[in-house]
Amino acid sequence: MTAKILDGNALGQKLRAGFRQRAEELAAQGVQPGLAVILVGDDPASQVYVRNKVNACAQAGFHSEKHIYPIDVAPQTVFDKIAELNATPQIHGILVQLPLPRHFDADAVLDAIAPEKDVDSFRAENVGALMQGQPCFIPCTPYGVMKFFEEAGIPLKGQEAVIVGRSNIVGKPMAMLLMHAGATVTVCHSQTRDLKAHCRRADILVAAVGKAKMITGEMIKPGAVVIDVGINRLPDGKLCGDVDFASAREIAAFITPVPGGVGPMTITMLLANTLQSAERAASA
Ligand code: NDP
View 1 (spheres, rainbow, N blue to C red):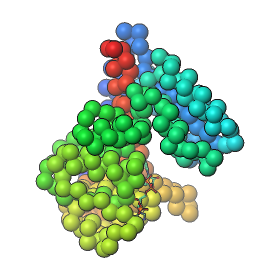
View 2 (cartoon, protein in one colour; view 1 turned 180 degrees about the vertical axis):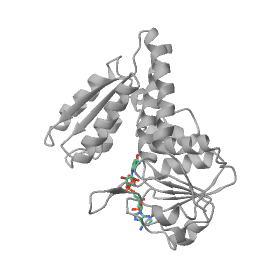
View 3 (cartoon, helix red, strand yellow; view 1 turned 90 degrees about the vertical axis):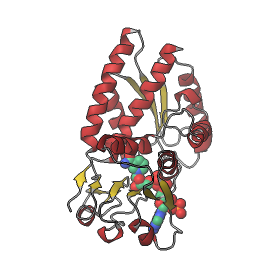
View 4 (cartoon, rainbow, N blue to C red; view 1 turned 180 degrees about the horizontal axis):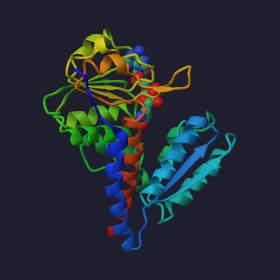
């Protein structure tokens, strides 16, 4: 079997075309969706992520703005900017690019974002609402993964889902969404015994670890859906996922590539959350 590719660029473009249309409808009411991105320091990967987010906003007809600070900036300067953006009606979403430098209390910074503008869904209110299945901003990466299942008509009810990785931004919210969708969920992590045995049981396997090609074809159940969240840079400079794509695609039924899989969907769902926030503000 050669797996069907779940193409994040294609699905992202399709969804973004719809967002553009909704943004035009909002513009007719005098509201343009607006996203502010805060970046501290000069980490090259973070700079690329911020640039991609700003470009995606422009393509979808959203307003966006970047606030970039040197690595040694006083945290209070960033808190003051967040307070200002919280009070700016033209801004519907605020995103602080992580990681922050060590002299920052990242939780305190994220908690300073107004809940109704927390489009990255990091605040405890959003996390709690997600857990209870209440309306909230869904964290962008797992939200994007759910869109793949929806688009490809992949059933989730009663399926065995295994997630490798338990981070707050990927693994945990992914587990919550799959559980709400009716899957039976197992979350694996660095202390899991016999990772291979868990993975081999998975109808849906989500890898979010950050270790290049650690999930190989022999760890995959024939016919599984394999979602590769990982982004790793190889010594030759190329990007790869946590899944060994070459061996996995011969076993799986569906697979996301890296690059071009989950990455573009994460940005797409950031736009979705910003749009949702703008629509809510416009109807308030
Ligand atoms: P974290 O480092 O926060 O979490 C990694 C998780 O992997 C941890 O739960 C850790 O376990 C687990 N882990 C580490 N080693 C093993 C192992 N040998 N076996 C099983 N589990 C292990 O990473 P993130 O969740 O933030 O990101 C994961 C990957 O996804 C990264 O490559 C990141 O770049 C990428 N990413 C991609 C995005 C996209 O848009 N495509 C968005 C966000 C992240 P423990 O908790 O026990 O330490």
